[in-house]
Image 1 (cartoon, rainbow, N blue to C red):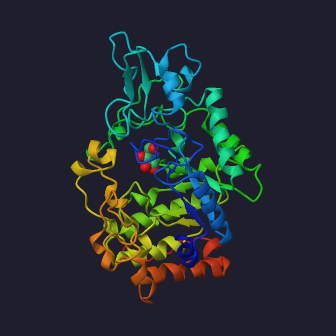
Image 2: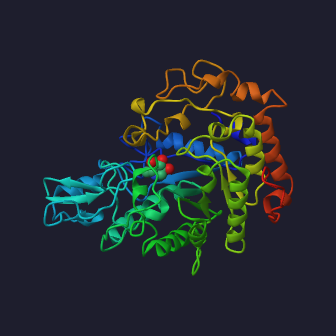
Length: 429
Ligand code: NOJ
């Protein structure tokens, strides 16, 4: 029902976070069936209608494809865990304990604790990079590959325009499961897996070949489908995922600005480094916010939100806007103890504040819902909402809209070359 708004705003595509059947232990990033829609969110028929209506408005629809792990409730995992001799045993990463019974290696879960969960019934450990209810798939198993490629086919045939590959650099693990070295620069407060350097858990052999195969696969569908990837990797590594020997992802997302401090020197250096490295390799992206980081308004302040919009929408390449940033939503400060987000409860880094309901109006539930939503509505909904700001020529929303119009109007902002200017320490120019 809000597609007209997206069209009016001037965006070209919408990326949905996972809406597949899921026990929602990790808000949908725990998929229990890759080829259906979670009943709490709708149905396949509703989804088809969404795609159809979006296409009528020249809007593309991109799905979040969670390939690193499934829900423990997925049939594949239930089979795999049922016995050591089950044909699906090897679809996940099962290992024997060390001789003293302890976990196979020192790898740490993103959400804290070991990545290894003991399964008493079959007397082995299984690996989970995130929650123990999110077991990691074994991408070296041909059955996994075939089943996961089939899930892409299912959505591509329904007209989906592309996928965002969740946790993209993590799909493969070291085949020998060697210990990761300690990270001497780890700072308390960072996510727990940062205690170790991801030498044997990130960007492992097989990853580039998989991406090249995925690219060749989606390229078989007409109309141009797109692959985005979520990468928390250094820029020099990020740009390799455009592909070296064969094309890989169209848009490996550059997320560096989502967690860097809002200081001109820092931002200017990142942009210059990134644009320099991307040149000649692929098409750049700019992202200031995702559902995993603090909102820009919180990091930079409300007045800087206008500057942030200008920065985001005047870079060379494809920008992504996180819902609500265009009206300057602050989110809600929710203590980690009360978090819906399991990362918040386990690590103190609560992502709920960033994920509160979109503010369409100043109504009690901000026009998002007629019943109380599972996260609270922002106290700033009186002004940070679409209804008020769409009538105000000086609003942040109007600025977003006009910048998007300007990008659309000519090639300079989209395709022009990037040249940093020496403008002193207080400016990025
Ligand atoms: C990346 C997603 O963006 C994040 O929200 C999620 O917690 C992890 N992947 C695990 O699925």
